[in-house]
Image (tube, rainbow, N blue to C red):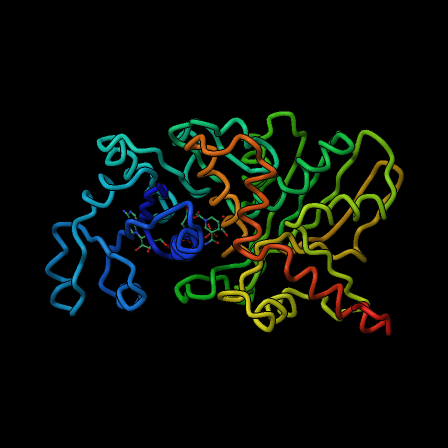
Length: 357
Ligand SMILES: NC(=O)C1=CN([C@@H]2O[C@H](COP(=O)(O)OP(=O)(O)OC[C@H]3O[C@@H](n4cnc5c(N)ncnc54)[C@H](O)[C@@H]3O)[C@@H](O)[C@H]2O)C=CC1
Ligand SMILES: O=C(OP(=O)(O)O)[C@H](O)COP(=O)(O)O
């Protein structure tokens, strides 16, 4: 029997969770909670997705020509698992409603860590999430940092890390946010919330982070410096990251991809849904090793990077699978994680005139 899933909120993250649930035969989407009768609601109805609405707003939907499938409380009652994809800070209010229904919930990174029993990132603490009632998937930048740092910890041990994060100002749809022509310290002190948040998942991690916001909507960019417990070679590190499909290794010299805009174009040209990049985009020419010290730049597509982890965590919460690697394999194959890597490698071989048959 597939697990019945409800999604509360259908903005940047919620709509992507909906699509990942629809791809997965282990899950059945009961429906989505919508709060405004906007074009997104029409689109969902067109796609056959049941839309549930607040009791006091049902009239607005019906007057706009949208026939809801029911009220939101019914959606939560029917579900085995709820995804909260509400605007940051609203999840804590929603939690009181979820508690009445007694269903497990996946919260997002815009909530405070206290909202859930644990904060989560698959490569760091999958097994801690098994059979938990409430789990919080950390935010996009923290997810990108933790994927890298938890793998490096496992392979080499991490002594210390620094993350300097160049944040996108807003998502592409958010025409109400700035800054314009500015570089904003976010916050105007060190550390930024990212390092602190990473330690809610990986308390062993000695990390400092700093962040600025710049006027772009496409992606975040992170400069990471890590001091490892043992010396490494660049090829070894790249081989390790390559084993995990959630890293897209970009060879800028050969592919010409040296910016977030070219990365986005690659994803769109490759036919990724919405042009999403679920992987950490690691620029391999920036991977520099000095004995035990490693430096690199990685691009993080904020709209989609947390979707694989949101999918993985359902298997842990519901106790469906105890082996994180089997879960990652399933999620990655459903979302096509790793497919861009193949594309880049193939074109690289073609550039070198090698036979890739
Ligand atoms: N947008 C991003 O780059 C990322 C966002 N996150 C986190 O994901 C969460 C959702 O963010 P976005 O999708 O960007 O927000 P969003 O603003 O794009 O979407 C939020 C959705 O929730 C709906 N909503 C409004 N009131 C609600 C309520 N009381 N309960 C449930 N839903 C309600 C809105 O109508 C909208 O559809 C936040 O915690 C955010 O911090 C995490 C990673 C990346
Ligand atoms: O979770 C995010 O960023 P973060 O990891 O820097 O906190 C998302 O890009 C949301 O950021 P926002 O709070 O600027 O909308």
